[in-house]
Image (tube, rainbow over all chains, first blue to last red; front, side, top):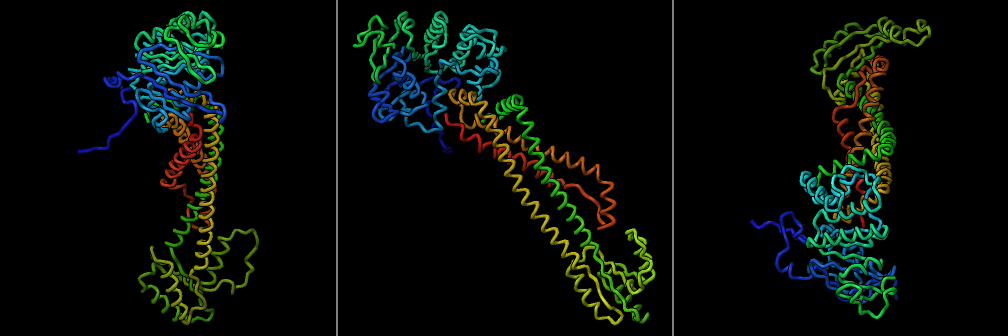
Length: 263
Length: 293
């Protein structure tokens, strides 16, 4: 019998399923000649070309208002490109229907500067929500959340109210929520912006540990001290244009100075 | 949509916003009480009309100088009719006594003239005789010599019909009003709840929640509000009914010959389900505009 075939974008994010070989061979994220306008005469992003391979750790930097967050928002489709294409696992995100966007986001882990965790929920509830939306059985949710909390250094803290946690711990909860569905790509938008320098290093290290397990990480920050401590690929956005260094600031060949670069 | 997860999240929402929901449910219960009270009125009028319609009767007022033989012949004719159950001859004296006994108006009516109470034949019709049939029999009976006037109570039924129609229209109007009321109150309550839980919605949407997943608990909360309001209204009406039943029942029985009845089972089910459905719809409509993240 020929049933109606339901086509979902990004079908590999299903329990027990992995990306196919052709999908694995492609870069996880490609931006082709991307333009984004908020004002007609002044594009926030102009002709951005970018390719991110699977398993990469990429810093995205630039002064405040340069378009770092805009770039990330284009990837999780809070914004739509005005020109060009954004390909995630080979699929053009701009062409997704509204109904398909949730399935895109289930493949992404998003972490924000302001944490965006729910104060009146427990740590467990804040992390578990990312699995509840995919209707995962409670037993599995419990074990996966416990595992994620252990990875971010909050083992056994599930029943605690998040409002009682420190800023660094709250950000760890947000990171746990981002990694618990085992996404293909993590988008971190200034995740250390509200943290002390030593906590910022802790959180960066946490993302690096996550990256070491094979998850691709895009880490947007304008914190020079963080970027200078690591040799990850560096992408700078300035005046809507992108320039990059493959191995951190040491190999930076851009025309602008470091202070212009990171604001 | 995962129903179990939606129920869990709806329970959490109800717990967290309980004050807001208590106020909303109480306000809606008042609206449902108005609707229920009107329906109760319609139900009782309907019951009275049905009872009167089923226990049809005709009164034949006899001429003062009617020949007793003509009256006896008339009785024989009447008793021979298949639609007639019983015929009773009421003399002027009996009519006067009966009236003075039943009319508790607090005034001395014993001096009323005798022509006020003519002799009559009270004809009780069998169960199920239609109003049209009753009118037709009454029409034919006017042709008898001994009969001065025939009362088939058609005008009373007409008035009752008009009253019932008016009450039904009132109930229908109130039902529409209550529906708008429920949609508006639940819509506003859910809007407030959504505003308070905006961050939750945003987080869920960024984690990949579908609109159905986000909407689910709010729809259930709206459904619960509608159901709880109508249940509260039904319980309040039932309490009122039980408290006033004895005193109202005897008065109504004396006036109309019918007993007070409470809302029927189907009406109750319709009120409960209607409340739940309208609540769910109101909630779904109001949450829709907050889903774009």
